[in-house]
Length: 250
Image 1 (cartoon, rainbow, N blue to C red):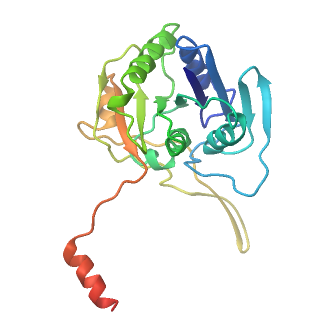
Image 2 (image 1 turned 60 degrees about the vertical axis):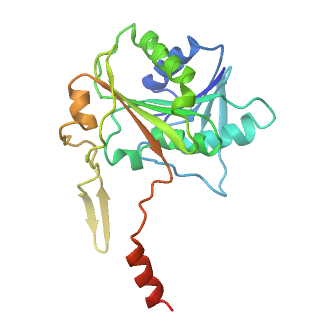
Image 3 (image 1 turned 180 degrees about the vertical axis):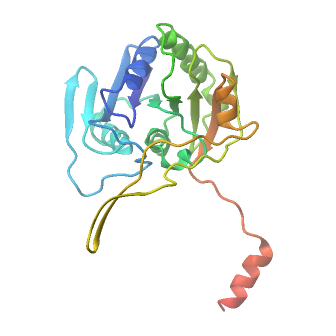
């Protein structure tokens, strides 16, 4: 099994080392392609018509100057262009949970989303900050990934991927939460004002919101949470609305 690992925290992040260690317990064909620095909240963005620099850092290990999703595009369009494609993409383990509106902003989940465009099963892993990291975490994560791999036909639909949030302590029981509301970037601070030029910064951090049964409530109870997501989320417009729209545009 060929496993490709990426993230949005950068090639040197502890979380991607944990993911690679876990994957290496399952396969001898593990590749790591990750941004050369932190790309928090990069979402699914791509770099178009501008150069990207890939740097070989070791056997099956590369950094990319672009976004997290660029790591998948460059892997598929260059690294594996004439070779066997990955069987599974693992994103993360992100430094911090991805819940609520994070699902739209997350570069970790942007990796998983991009992988689905190439027809590859993908899992995005995130973990609460200041987790109690222990020696057994990689072995537990390997068992988790292995179970998801052998059951992939039950969850890997076209255009879908999994988002997994890990609590502070592993091992953990697994639960499927509802998706809550927990928006980042609710505040903007003024750094400098100089006439017509204003320098602003969106600060890090937030106080997590929670409601019964959502990701944050279950994470607080010590669960690992799993959601299946897709990129083509749609709600149909009512027939009467569409008829009115057609009438107005005749």
